[in-house]
Length: 197
Image (cartoon, rainbow, N blue to C red; front, side):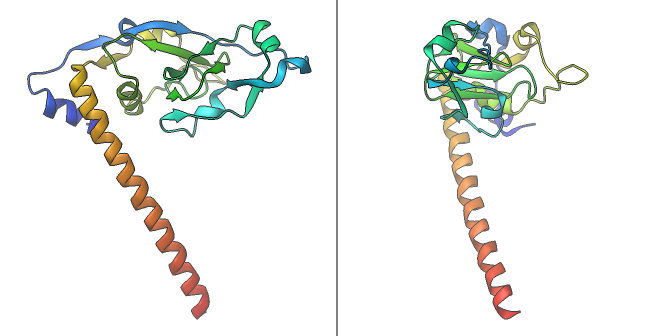
């Protein structure tokens, strides 16, 4: 049982409602890639996200490797996802989810999700971090929109979701501090070892 599930059980002793993720989605946007053979579509002022941008991101997507122009956006199936919403990978690293800090265009391996009022974005990301979504495919693993929609998610009352997010945020902060301290201590010990050699 994950820490999130333990918190739900602790804070909702009488049980919690589960919903299909699709029931909790207001809008679900796809993306696309402007033609790489047209230079005027690229290196503009619109951040353009692909799976490589979210794979090592824990919670918030702040930057993207690539950017596109207004012309590139107009001439491709890419969509702008407004800041504060969810971006989820459906291919390569299916189920990997982040919140975008800025407006961002997305490629075809990502979906932009705008949630209904029953789910908090951060709670949803934390929940998806507990899942192991394998995906299907011989070369590139992926999930369909239908499979994404069919994922069951616990939907506690919003004040409970807020409390879970608060606790998990504190835990993540503490873990980051401990990791930084441990790294610094190991580095110091390595320097001492080299000095005495």
